[in-house]
Length: 289
Image (cartoon, rainbow, N blue to C red; front, side, top):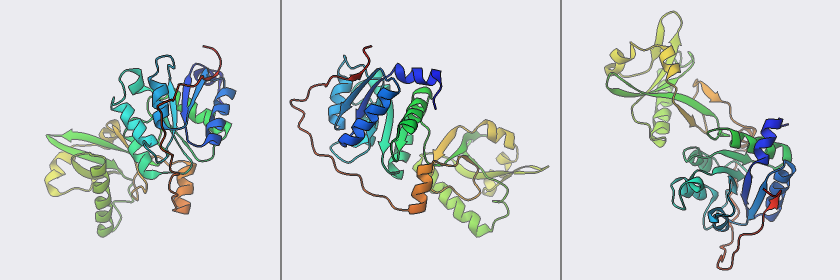
């Protein structure tokens, strides 16, 4: 259930919903109107949605777009908007919610880095749509449905480090196992384009900070404390399979749990290429502003 303040957020919002599935399009419209949405525009594909978004009379506040293959995918639509490819100002910064029937891990990881506002993943119902849309409208950044871990990307005495908090179990693991985790972390940080020495750190009760690093970095790291690391956790990274022992910020969503249980991904349904020569912005449903 959403509170009065949360309900007011939806009631003040003009939505554009983009989906080639007419049934899903209708359901999302129905759920938003049931929450009192100010206006809801509908489009069958991103190109049609772009026409509505660029129309000055539409004044869209929040875009909900299905992630499907076609001329432009939902992810590409997001990236084009955030880059300013299709207009600056409000168009570039419009709230953007990515909708997908099943978890698409690669798309989510890319969307997390591209300024996504929120997600609708899995079967749609009014309660989850209301909760997830409200969350996207009221938070500054999107919450990934994947597990996330926090790291400190810092410069210490002239050298860049990516400090990764671990629990003390890492220090007690076999050296070969530790090296395997380090390899996994290095690959992950390269994907996130984080430069610096990737360094697992952990608390040694009564002694300070433990770390896994080559000897040339020991002098710099000896001056650090776990409080310093905690105070400088400035990057949150979504991960499909979290490294063992890493301290996570989020355990992941129910959709992630279902994905890991099945280990199966189904390909998105292709959209038909639309001829938009005669396309006109349709009238919205909802209350008169």
